[in-house]
Length: 227
Length: 307
Image (tube, rainbow over all chains, first blue to last red; front, side, top):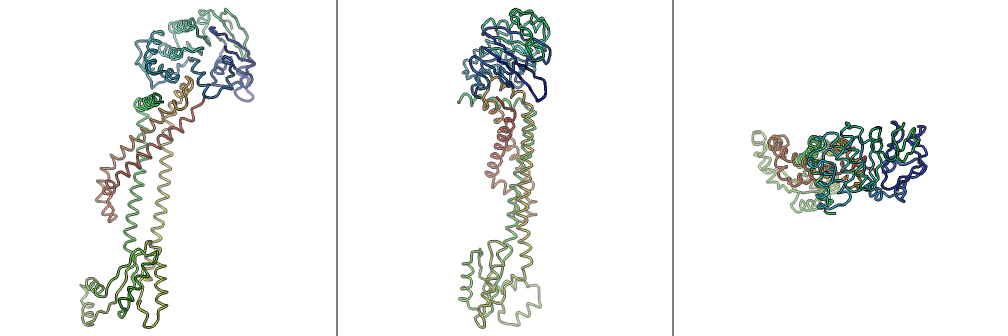
């Protein structure tokens, strides 16, 4: 489903590669935790999947399509099929919870009736039905991250990318977020998770890809957090 | 399409209201810019009106000899009217000339006495000529001179042309008028340009605060117009609100300055001009405000848009 083929990314001339000659395949429905020290290349690898950066060498495929060859229109369409969650939540600060989630549905061309039905449903799923009209600054970090996850999954994407989603959260919220990610995966969505958190990786207990200095150093089907 | 437009408009208005401080700053700067535009309109009209009043005071008078007959004068009047530079030619009969002379010198006993002793009217008829532009008086005077020198002896009916007495004043006025117009245009251009740059930068700063938001919209898969639209609507609102504020401010300001402007510039009353040309002000301020707001937002967002 997702295939990185001999991918290298160098940000500036003379700098060491952020990602060095990586080949990695991910099947539909997998839950893959990508672990490694800061600067290991985890985030760059994910960014290449939703084309925020392009590889210097090699190719990235989403399904059968080479991402570098997609037109702007197809790229936007592909992004609507990939949900993204970040450490810093990246919610739209001037929009309330309902509007933040509705925005993802609107850009996908959903009708107002569908949006009115889907948003409360997804908020129920992440346990935030009572915060529907709050603005992001009125929510705790854990709540903001759950809104971000709701926004990422409301379009029922094929893939959910979670880049350090628990980095700013306390252990209880971390546990909640991981449980939601597992639930999303159980519903059939492929989940790519990067994290530093050993407890998180061990509690997921699925495939673990370990990176170091831009390279994959371990790839365990039922892995644990080992650095 | 309609649904998308409606959503973009709704987010634009919501963004304008929710980013209260940023919107306020943008509206204030835009108000100053549009105030400059209004000042340019007013000062342009005031300059034109003053120059016109001055220009109207300038003329060239052809004095005829007392033995010039009316048909001869009429002939010259017709020739002058045919000249493209001439705006109007007014005939002043010897009797009218005498009446004006008497009126002007009514307190000068000596002159009045001398005039009475003469018994006859020593003044000839005259033609007062107004040119379309002050710079054209010289060519009219030259034309009259050629006429004068062509006709000799008893045919010479032109006594004198007063252009050469007034030449220095007319030349100076022509220079002042031309340089005032040029200076007016230059000042207007510089001020307009400065205001546009300031407004553009303010809106750019306002959108800079939303750059992360634009990045998130890109990531969620929003199309360029879906991202850009609400910012452009907010830009349009900055312009429209600022235009209304300027129109509301101009009413009391021009009302207050009206009498003073009339005293200072003679015929030009700034309040009468503002109320008379209100549709022009409304249109000019609205169009420039909305265009400036929308264009600035369009350009500022473009910087942060990427797929």
